[in-house]
Image 1 (spheres, rainbow, N blue to C red):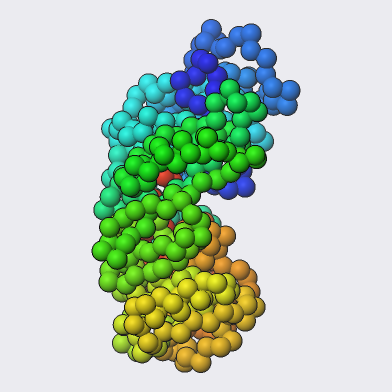
Image 2: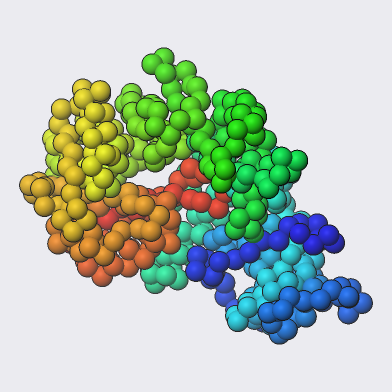
Length: 454
């Protein structure tokens, strides 16, 4: 962090961000005002990095900018004669003082020095480490504004990536905005000497390897924060030679009382409605149990039509959608490439006395091979990893031509990429509903519903 900068630097990985804002001509739009700081405010005597590109701004040149948008990474967007400048920790409508530290081929990056005119949506962060820790991007954003922006983010992705305009339902709020995460994974690197302090926490904002010490995390469950001091103390006394990643997972007992485990291989339990799921603590499961029943309930609603009797849960994991939705269907099949996940899904079906659900381990190239359901009476639920569906899977889905598809995604950008493919194959988009599973972060879960080709 530059000692004269009030906010730490944030970096942009150009492979993972995109913005869509209409070109704005300086001084010609009532929605955009640009002020230049006089030359006397330039930082002098600071040598730029060796590879610094000197155009269009000098190193540490200070600008007063109006922020008119956000990227899908939560960065503020301003324009100078059409040239984009990204500034972290800003909100739309704000006027800020920013200091240039990098000029890329098509944009510049700047540190936020001061907020000169704050947005009415700006609020005090709940975490003292906000702007230093890379975990949260929106703690300075009122919650209603976070939801509105995430809704707009999905709309803009659809318009600009898929060329498709569609009315997106307002982002569904999390019942709990703090203390909601049931799992955290702090990191540490062993210090070079016994005297050196060993941070235990998360990556510092804008850094690829620097760990920031995080004694408490406001978005983690209270049970996790209660257990964290002892875990940190034990780790400092007996650190691994090369550092490591810790696990704190809040699981439920038979009476739904929560406790925390730190063992990746421990069998833990989560509850959705009346359905209980066992899985290994280190494996994936949705990490906001407070919204889980509403989230799964919406998926259940979208899967049903009078003529649909069968459900396929692709990427089924330990059986979340297949087992929660089983009462609504004659037969359910869960399909997963991981044999270990399939075994957990089978155990969970038995645990919950669900007899109309079967689970199959299938390769990605033959995901529907063991399915005998008639496609015209079948809904397929897909919940792929962040990278989205593989081309092989989409080819098979299109060939199967189910009556309905409900696509759940943790990354709307890859979902929208797949949207374009499904639309081109004759599927019809009927509903788009974002869910805020991770308040105060840039992440948004999105559900798209499709009707199959007629």
